Length: 337
Image (cartoon, rainbow, N blue to C red; front, top):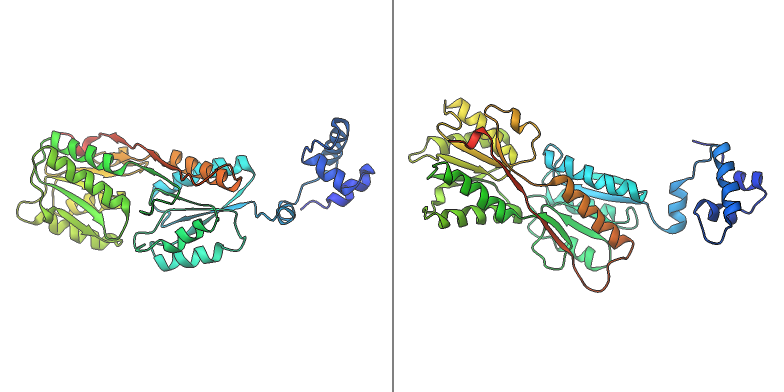
């Protein structure tokens, strides 16, 4: 840490601490000549401001929290990069908290963050969030909260998400156009609106192309990879097994690859696969994985921008912003004819 503080800097310049502080903040109250003197002396003495002390004076932490369910999913790594880009421009620190897909951890994290520890929260809900009332109450009380990707159903919450219905429809339509008639939908158990909306898109595409819906092809999975492989193997061995699979999350697509390998089914010859995924190595898998790719970086960036508008009180009235960004279908070898 630098031994040069604001008091020492003011002594060297023969100015009051208040004047030096205002000059460093580019206040209109200080002349251009004085600002120049202060900046030159600050550079000469290698003065570094104390952001923590500064934030205490302003009653702001200069930090925001990002609460996410997991970090292994490449989506959240990309979203955090987008958030970090905006936060750095604003001179803010980003604190990341993992809830490990556990609503109790999520609730305790939110309680921990209250009381001035951060100036706002960006949160993506964990899969077992049955009730987001604590979070919506926090937002209603005037604390800046923005939900991204995994969002609550409440109409009064600011959100940034992708069009999951559209993604589910496009992915299913793609499988149908390559000849699939028995398309399974792999979903993670829980209450997430993202999973439900993707499934609604899947069902809508079946209806559009007059393919009967089969409840047995909606396959409930878990958060355990080994258990998921067994569930998927069982589905692929059943009578009238799927000839196409739409995976609602990328880890279920990976489990599908392992399951097919264990029972000697070839992708895409025996079963075609598409997954919602931001996996960077999707093109390197064998075969390369077709994906519905959400714009994770852009979603993180937009969510952070919205949060800072709330922190800076640039949102007026009772307007609640809800931003929806389209995902992109990238066809690769796993779903080709």
